[in-house]
Length: 208
Image (cartoon, rainbow, N blue to C red):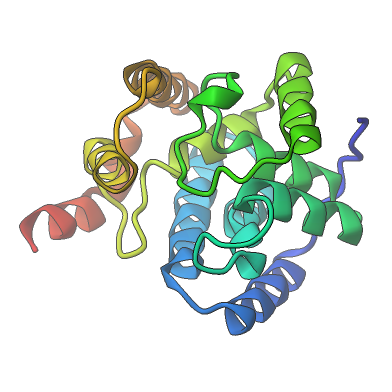
């Protein structure tokens, strides 16, 4: 599949998220807002488009607006991908798929919502095999691990939180290593440790 490079404005993205939250309220929406904040902050520090980073983070989990209690068809990455494709935003459709794959192996998907049909599994596998992730896709993979639904946090906290909810897999440590490599990549791009941009938030989270 060939994706266009379109993405919505910040105002349009906010409206999409708000509509989705009204459909299915939950902590996923605040997680999206925190990922957006982290992505915009890092992007602005390293010469990327802060608005594009913000929108990418805000909508990376929009599939949860159609996913109810881990029941029904598909999973949030597929649903989000399809929502964005139907709206014409190919760049964000890619984000919806790519954010869960710091390593390009479909079996490494860590969520509980693994209701892939055979066609969906084939589509995601094909996407991963051909994907050359751009810096915005890499940034959302990183920022997804910098935010819970409550706060910006140390990556280790978020990683442990995910494992506590979903369990270990044979790919867990490999995914952790890939995510730490992403942090180093953006440290280098920004010229300093990205944690320096969130010292107040991280300190508050550690001490609460």
